[in-house]
Image (tube, rainbow, N blue to C red):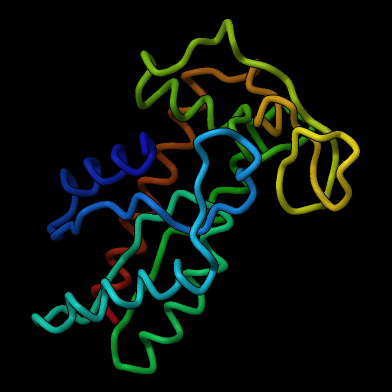
Length: 197
Protein backbone atom coordinates (compact mmCIF):
# COMPACT_ATOMS: atom_id res chain seq x y z
CA UNK A 1 0.00 0.00 0.00
CA UNK A 2 2.75 2.45 0.93
CA UNK A 3 4.55 1.90 -2.37
CA UNK A 4 1.39 2.23 -4.47
CA UNK A 5 0.20 5.37 -2.66
CA UNK A 6 3.61 6.99 -2.96
CA UNK A 7 3.95 6.30 -6.68
CA UNK A 8 0.38 7.45 -7.26
CA UNK A 9 1.13 10.82 -5.65
CA UNK A 10 4.40 11.25 -7.55
CA UNK A 11 2.72 10.49 -10.87
CA UNK A 12 -0.09 12.95 -10.09
CA UNK A 13 2.52 15.64 -9.35
CA UNK A 14 4.55 15.06 -12.50
CA UNK A 15 2.17 13.82 -15.22
CA UNK A 16 -1.16 14.97 -16.62
CA UNK A 17 -3.16 11.82 -15.93
CA UNK A 18 -6.37 10.63 -14.32
CA UNK A 19 -5.89 7.98 -11.66
CA UNK A 20 -8.52 5.37 -10.84
CA UNK A 21 -8.95 4.03 -7.29
CA UNK A 22 -6.29 1.61 -6.07
CA UNK A 23 -6.79 -2.13 -6.53
CA UNK A 24 -6.19 -3.43 -3.01
CA UNK A 25 -6.47 -7.14 -3.77
CA UNK A 26 -4.59 -9.08 -6.45
CA UNK A 27 -2.47 -12.19 -7.06
CA UNK A 28 -0.10 -12.67 -4.09
CA UNK A 29 0.00 -16.45 -3.47
CA UNK A 30 3.51 -16.36 -1.99
CA UNK A 31 2.42 -14.89 1.33
CA UNK A 32 -0.68 -16.87 2.26
CA UNK A 33 1.00 -18.62 5.19
CA UNK A 34 1.40 -15.28 6.98
CA UNK A 35 -1.59 -14.01 9.02
CA UNK A 36 -3.64 -11.34 7.28
CA UNK A 37 -2.31 -12.04 3.78
CA UNK A 38 -4.80 -12.47 0.95
CA UNK A 39 -4.58 -13.50 -2.67
CA UNK A 40 -7.04 -13.68 -5.53
CA UNK A 41 -6.95 -16.63 -7.92
CA UNK A 42 -4.80 -15.91 -10.98
CA UNK A 43 -7.85 -15.84 -13.26
CA UNK A 44 -9.74 -13.56 -10.87
CA UNK A 45 -6.83 -11.09 -10.63
CA UNK A 46 -6.52 -11.07 -14.43
CA UNK A 47 -10.26 -10.57 -14.94
CA UNK A 48 -10.42 -7.85 -12.30
CA UNK A 49 -7.97 -5.71 -14.28
CA UNK A 50 -9.66 -6.54 -17.59
CA UNK A 51 -13.10 -5.64 -16.25
CA UNK A 52 -11.92 -2.35 -14.74
CA UNK A 53 -10.22 -1.29 -17.97
CA UNK A 54 -13.19 -2.39 -20.08
CA UNK A 55 -15.59 -0.44 -17.85
CA UNK A 56 -13.52 2.75 -18.02
CA UNK A 57 -12.89 2.33 -21.77
CA UNK A 58 -16.66 2.48 -22.24
CA UNK A 59 -16.38 6.21 -21.40
CA UNK A 60 -13.63 6.90 -23.93
CA UNK A 61 -10.12 6.13 -22.62
CA UNK A 62 -8.36 3.35 -24.51
CA UNK A 63 -4.94 3.54 -22.83
CA UNK A 64 -4.26 2.43 -19.27
CA UNK A 65 -1.19 2.16 -17.08
CA UNK A 66 -1.18 -0.01 -13.96
CA UNK A 67 1.15 1.19 -11.19
CA UNK A 68 2.29 -2.32 -10.33
CA UNK A 69 4.32 -2.85 -7.16
CA UNK A 70 4.39 -6.65 -7.19
CA UNK A 71 6.28 -9.47 -8.83
CA UNK A 72 3.68 -12.26 -8.77
CA UNK A 73 1.10 -9.80 -10.10
CA UNK A 74 2.84 -9.83 -13.49
CA UNK A 75 1.51 -13.37 -14.00
CA UNK A 76 -2.01 -11.89 -14.07
CA UNK A 77 -1.17 -8.58 -15.75
CA UNK A 78 0.45 -10.09 -18.85
CA UNK A 79 -2.65 -12.07 -19.90
CA UNK A 80 -4.86 -9.11 -18.96
CA UNK A 81 -2.83 -6.92 -21.32
CA UNK A 82 -3.21 -9.50 -24.11
CA UNK A 83 -6.97 -9.82 -23.60
CA UNK A 84 -7.44 -6.04 -23.69
CA UNK A 85 -5.17 -5.63 -26.73
CA UNK A 86 -7.44 -7.97 -28.68
CA UNK A 87 -10.26 -5.50 -27.97
CA UNK A 88 -8.29 -2.41 -29.02
CA UNK A 89 -7.49 -1.33 -25.46
CA UNK A 90 -3.84 -0.70 -24.58
CA UNK A 91 -2.77 -1.53 -21.05
CA UNK A 92 0.80 -1.39 -19.77
CA UNK A 93 2.16 -1.79 -16.27
CA UNK A 94 5.21 -1.15 -14.11
CA UNK A 95 7.79 -3.90 -14.37
CA UNK A 96 9.98 -3.89 -11.25
CA UNK A 97 12.67 -5.73 -13.20
CA UNK A 98 13.35 -2.46 -15.03
CA UNK A 99 15.52 -1.35 -12.10
CA UNK A 100 17.14 -4.71 -11.35
CA UNK A 101 20.59 -3.58 -12.52
CA UNK A 102 20.53 -0.62 -10.14
CA UNK A 103 19.36 -2.89 -7.31
CA UNK A 104 22.27 -5.27 -7.94
CA UNK A 105 24.71 -2.36 -7.95
CA UNK A 106 23.67 -0.90 -4.59
CA UNK A 107 22.52 -4.02 -2.75
CA UNK A 108 24.78 -5.73 -0.22
CA UNK A 109 22.49 -8.67 0.57
CA UNK A 110 23.11 -12.18 -0.75
CA UNK A 111 19.69 -12.23 -2.37
CA UNK A 112 16.03 -11.61 -1.70
CA UNK A 113 12.94 -9.87 -2.98
CA UNK A 114 10.49 -9.35 -0.12
CA UNK A 115 10.71 -6.94 2.82
CA UNK A 116 14.43 -7.09 2.09
CA UNK A 117 17.21 -4.51 1.88
CA UNK A 118 15.73 -2.82 -1.19
CA UNK A 119 12.06 -2.75 -0.21
CA UNK A 120 12.87 -1.64 3.34
CA UNK A 121 15.14 1.09 1.96
CA UNK A 122 12.31 2.31 -0.27
CA UNK A 123 9.91 2.55 2.68
CA UNK A 124 12.59 4.33 4.76
CA UNK A 125 12.73 6.95 2.00
CA UNK A 126 9.00 7.16 1.31
CA UNK A 127 7.57 6.90 4.82
CA UNK A 128 10.30 6.61 7.48
CA UNK A 129 7.83 6.56 10.37
CA UNK A 130 6.51 3.21 9.06
CA UNK A 131 9.87 1.46 9.63
CA UNK A 132 11.37 0.30 12.93
CA UNK A 133 14.91 -0.75 12.03
CA UNK A 134 15.30 -2.34 15.48
CA UNK A 135 12.95 -5.05 14.21
CA UNK A 136 14.71 -5.52 10.85
CA UNK A 137 16.05 -9.03 10.26
CA UNK A 138 18.17 -11.01 7.87
CA UNK A 139 16.05 -13.97 6.79
CA UNK A 140 17.46 -15.46 3.62
CA UNK A 141 17.67 -19.03 2.40
CA UNK A 142 18.83 -19.39 -1.22
CA UNK A 143 15.95 -20.85 -3.21
CA UNK A 144 14.33 -20.86 -6.64
CA UNK A 145 10.97 -22.07 -5.29
CA UNK A 146 7.87 -19.92 -5.48
CA UNK A 147 6.24 -18.90 -2.26
CA UNK A 148 7.48 -18.31 1.26
CA UNK A 149 6.80 -20.69 4.12
CA UNK A 150 7.22 -20.72 7.88
CA UNK A 151 7.73 -24.48 7.75
CA UNK A 152 11.44 -25.22 7.09
CA UNK A 153 10.56 -28.77 5.97
CA UNK A 154 7.97 -27.80 3.36
CA UNK A 155 9.07 -28.76 -0.13
CA UNK A 156 8.87 -26.43 -3.15
CA UNK A 157 8.77 -23.34 -0.94
CA UNK A 158 11.33 -20.90 0.45
CA UNK A 159 11.79 -21.02 4.20
CA UNK A 160 11.21 -17.66 5.90
CA UNK A 161 9.99 -17.62 9.51
CA UNK A 162 9.68 -13.82 9.48
CA UNK A 163 8.17 -13.26 6.02
CA UNK A 164 11.29 -11.35 5.00
CA UNK A 165 13.31 -12.80 2.15
CA UNK A 166 16.62 -10.94 2.16
CA UNK A 167 18.48 -8.74 4.63
CA UNK A 168 16.43 -5.78 5.83
CA UNK A 169 19.19 -4.81 8.30
CA UNK A 170 21.19 -3.34 5.39
CA UNK A 171 18.45 -0.86 4.42
CA UNK A 172 19.22 2.87 4.24
CA UNK A 173 17.37 6.00 3.21
CA UNK A 174 20.07 6.71 0.60
CA UNK A 175 19.53 3.36 -1.14
CA UNK A 176 15.79 3.90 -0.95
CA UNK A 177 16.08 7.28 -2.64
CA UNK A 178 18.18 5.87 -5.48
CA UNK A 179 15.79 3.00 -6.21
CA UNK A 180 12.60 5.00 -5.73
CA UNK A 181 13.69 7.88 -7.94
CA UNK A 182 14.85 5.46 -10.65
CA UNK A 183 11.48 3.76 -10.54
CA UNK A 184 9.58 7.07 -10.68
CA UNK A 185 11.65 8.02 -13.74
CA UNK A 186 10.86 4.65 -15.36
CA UNK A 187 7.13 4.96 -14.60
CA UNK A 188 6.97 8.45 -16.11
CA UNK A 189 8.88 7.21 -19.16
CA UNK A 190 6.45 4.28 -19.50
CA UNK A 191 3.48 6.65 -19.33
CA UNK A 192 5.03 8.96 -21.92
CA UNK A 193 5.64 6.03 -24.27
CA UNK A 194 2.08 4.85 -23.72
CA UNK A 195 0.77 8.28 -24.80
CA UNK A 196 2.65 7.91 -28.10
CA UNK A 197 1.11 4.52 -28.94
